[in-house]
Length: 277
Image 1: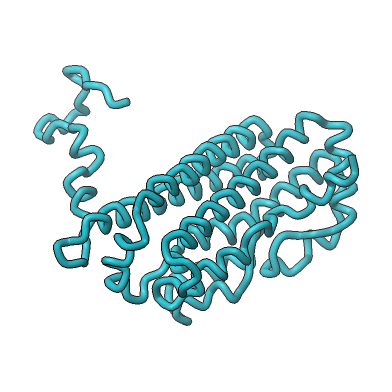
Image 2: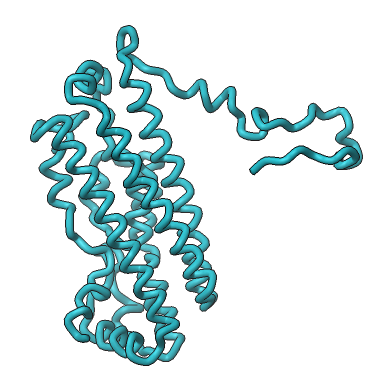
């Protein structure tokens, strides 16, 4: 909540600067000029479509900001900050799911009234969402195909494939806490996705049985995994009710591909150990 300033708060030498206002701090003029429908008229629901997706990208930016904090906390063995960062990401994910309800107020007819204007653009091109997947450990080189070879975007995503994922950091955190992870975890090829190993699962079972404080971090990661799966599910159902089984914009495979991504866990070890209790 923004509050008014107090007289005399200006720093020395800044007395000639225009006073900071709600509008200038949030750059409202620029922000509200970013919604530019392309359809004739324009079609009423195109503004909603633009705003929803811009807001998604803003929330993706915030989630990535929180993942930075989460990774740093794991590297520092800071459990309270780890849990706090995960809680915030989970709360944001609930908001993302809720935004689908707003998008579903748009009928198939209203979407198709401006759909052709989208040309080759597609949600599959969201660099921030792909970055989030790669950061968490869901990695597949085939997902780079929508970005031209040699482009800066593709280069940044390719560089992520060789880095430690959030789940890698989590397992290292557990290892330093006294739960020895398989040595091959440290030398494996990281571009193939999250580490899956029976030895890691045995150690995680022990975490649950002996360290309830650390088990909280495990459960919050499961919540994160489930939250992303829930958002994927709501997304695919929204696409199905809006365009059916037609191809998506930009020639993307649409609902068929989105459905194939459902129920693929980010952190398979944390789901597999449910059979051990």
